[in-house]
Structures are given as structure tokens and as C-alpha cells.
Image (tube, rainbow, N blue to C red):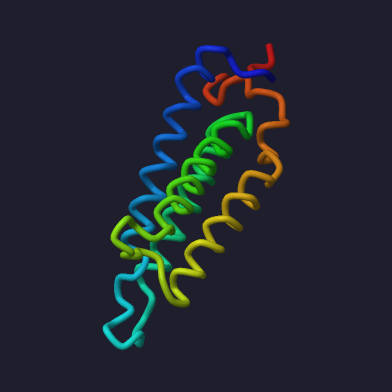
Length: 137
């Protein structure tokens, strides 16, 4: 089933913007919980990767096409890759092992979750209605 043009015209830019926001938030918050010496639980990294996965899975399940999830994944990757570069003053946001895992994890999640086949319930015939009762007469 092909999506309507207005669904694509509005939905794809919004999915891309949502992906940009998720990627930017994750890039700035993935270091939370690592501690000053680099020890501690990487709770920020885990939550940020879960956030990316949740957005991509939600878009993949909600729409019949992969385009919305791909637009969001492109937004996530754009934000992560741009913000991973050193700033004009040489400051960095993404560094260390957590930074490597964040960048690689966002890329892997984007590729894998967009490539996942459509859920099986999409291939079934639509239900006639759960409240309809057939009566033998």
C-alpha cells in the first residue's frame, strides 16, 4: 500500500526533525552517570540508545512504509555526526569509550531498525469488526 502524498509531505519532515532532536539530546546526555574518573554506570548512554530505538521502532510500526523511520534515522545520524565534531574552540561533546559506543550504536540502530521487515499484522486482511455478532437464523 502506497502512502498518501500528504502523509509523506508532512510526515517525513516531522520525522526528520524528531530524529534531529533525539540525536541532539542523546549526544549531549550520553555521558550522564559515567563519573569524573570514567567509572560508574553508563546510564545516560543506555537511556539515549533506548530513546533512539523507541522512536525508530514506533515509526516503523506506526506506518506501512520505512520512509518515516528512515527520515528519523537520518535526523539522528545527522545530529550525532555533526555534534561529534570538535567545536570552533576545540571543545568536544563526544569523547572516550562512551562517545564511540554512542556514535556506533546510533548508526547500528538506525540501519538495523529501518531494515527490519514490516510487522506480520500488516499483511493480514482487515478485521470485519470485533463487535459484529453472526447469528444463525
